[in-house]
Length: 406
Ligand code: AMP
Ligand code: MG
Image (cartoon, rainbow, N blue to C red; front, side, top):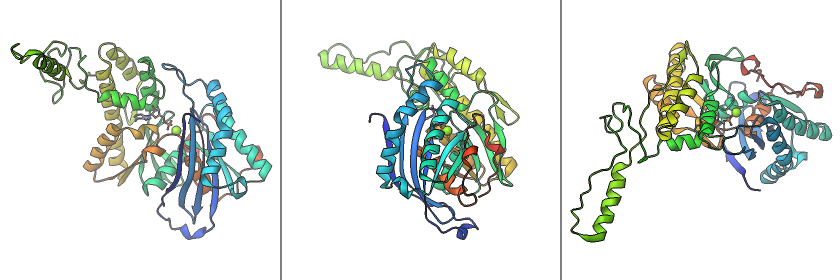
């Protein structure tokens, strides 16, 4: 079962809403996620209106060859191959059987058509054979609802940054409203496309984060911003004068070599890259091209500069949206929420605005069955499930078109 990641018995509670007393019934849900590279099933328990806990969350992730992007047909074949194993393990870890399940939810979009259809077929088959209510769920709403459950955020400005989304959102009158988004590629695509140009395995965000912090003795000459590097702009490529006078033998020579190597290790340098914020929207395509060029001379500095530039753009948009909406909470969800440098920059923004900062736990930042399961369970508070004829998938289902009735 190589590559399978599992999670069991994570207990949390969401804050109770005014309507919390409305539903007391204990419900067990199965959620199926298959929008892109991840096939995942999760079992959750809901008690009351909006209290829940994760009983199991099992994932298997499609990994393209190094330097290659996600191929929808290959990813869907991966999902077909692993679906039975993931589902069986999910049931076993939660110690439930299909007979215990009160509802099944699946990610109905947005996502890649061939991948979405695998999850939908599994959900429909189980639901129709066993007579279980079925709930199509918007994947992006799933990121937000799971984030609220796990962080306890009540009424946040939401930053959704993932492979499929880069959006700033606030909830008003039963719908999530967009306060800024990307005009071209998403933040996740920026990182993944840049990483693939370096020959990295996709998804690349985590390794770019590591490379952005990596000390190297392979730095090229160039601009050094204030506060970083040696501040002189001189070459890091040359040697450092040794302290060995040659009189103390081999031991001292070794120490000198080590000393030279240590002296030459320097952190990545900031290379100026295109910074594009239009109104409160961002654009990453120019940044991607320039970062790829910069990587030809120093890939570590290019990783560092890419992160600093892209995250500063996001920070500017967040800051403006916080000022405009007057929100007292910011919550970051989606796969890129795992990035520590992004969190550090955004928590600084929150400090300036006396705003509470929430970030979804690392384990649940990326795509997972729990986000779909929990949203289906919330929907069950107000809906009795979809007709089988309405259980289709929609590749480009925007979250700001969804009415949130629960
Ligand atoms: P999702 O679509 O929500 O599963 O998120 C996947 C995206 O998150 C991919 O683009 C990854 O490269 C990105 N990602 C995962 N971990 C990190 C990280 N530590 N830093 C930045 N991006 C990340
Ligand atoms: Mg996602």
